[in-house]
Length: 325
Image (cartoon, rainbow, N blue to C red; front, top):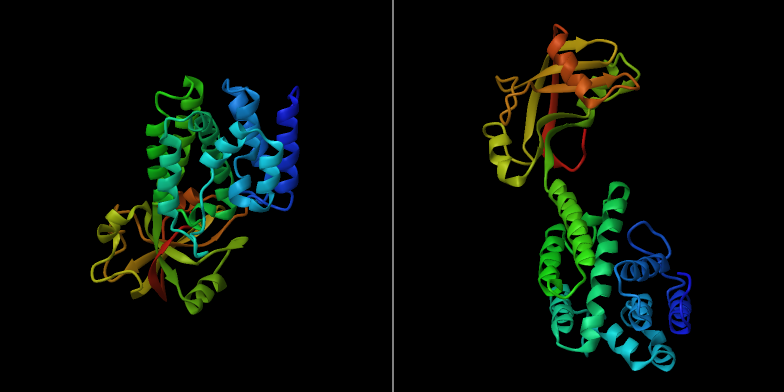
């Protein structure tokens, strides 16, 4: 950040040093990139006084790098230290045991809600922190599936953000509150997408091998038969075949082959039915694809290319999947 006063420059240098060996969970980048982003956000939305900006750089120091607590208090004025304290969760109790996340978050919200100057200064820093965290999670999740690995479960994120929004309302500048709302909408949409999963019959190794031996096109597939695509748990019962549950081993039969230059597809019979229970689509197995083919090409081939009768026995297990075919 350019054109900063001495207080901000000192805070920035301390933050760089204290967090030098720390990495972000989202994206595995230097932790200081987050502190810089939070400081820039508060300035962008009109909170450019040196105490607030200095505290933005240092907002995670007490929580993550307590070895630097004495230095923080030595080089920063009380207003900065008090603001950082509001923003810091106490991770362990007096016996050294890790405190529950819910308890820590309750304390965090209580500290932000107090009618003190430190809490009022902390509010825009908190909002900027959550904005950057939200977009970092969204960006990282495509590669790392980070939302599903964090201690905070996906559904808890939206609950936490709603609770914080109630605290911020009426106190933050309109532009920062709007930015927080935009970040919340984006993260909640990502979380809702995570709650929708595919229901498959995953073929066993012998059946996969049987399908791949028959592959005619460049990219062998033959891993699973889709029972339902991107549904939530409430729809599971309607999507399961009669008499089946998650983990049920089922016998299938490939009864017709449809193939052109894009995809090689087998119509699949489960019991006496070739239709998916959930949406009535045709049960099928993509055996192989052209290198540039997409998922929808299998459906197109199934619809427009007449099938040649075949008889191939397959077996598999009914299972949820987070993968998008």
